Image (cartoon, rainbow, N blue to C red; front, side, top):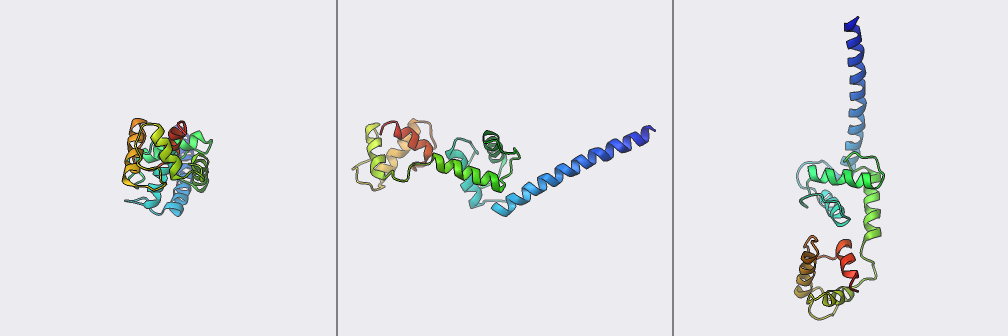
Amino acid sequence: MAFLFLCIVFSLSCTGCDLLLRILQKEAAEERDLFGNGYGYNSKVERLQVLLEEIGYNPGSIDGEMGHRTRTAVKSFQKGCGLKVTGYIDKKTWETLNRVYEADAVPKETDLKQIQSALKKTGFDPGPIDGKMGPKTKKAIKEFQKSKGLVQNGKVGPKTWRELHKWK
């Protein structure tokens, strides 16, 4: 009798494992369709990492590899957006991430002259306010980013823009 009970419990637990495995395989398959295989550098994964970083989810190194920190950032993003938390990038997660990024992005009408003017007001010398991305402007952006604890990449993404916009 005890043996029969153990067999039933074991078969039920394996069925649950099977179901979980099928769910994870489906999500992993959807991610592979969007991003290709998960081995080594992948430019799409690098884009994912940049988007996550820009909207405030730290994926660790921006290296184009789907590592533990990137998966953790994906899970945090999914949780924060009310999505199913899996750590995998399915179509819904990818679309939501891009929508959130676009909604938070630098306004399209923003030109480099506005950015240079804001940099100058904050005390960072972008050189002449001419709308051109020269070495002085790039250096001023990096110095501004450093002063605000942002990623120092010389690009004005949503986080940098938010900080600069306070001085506009």
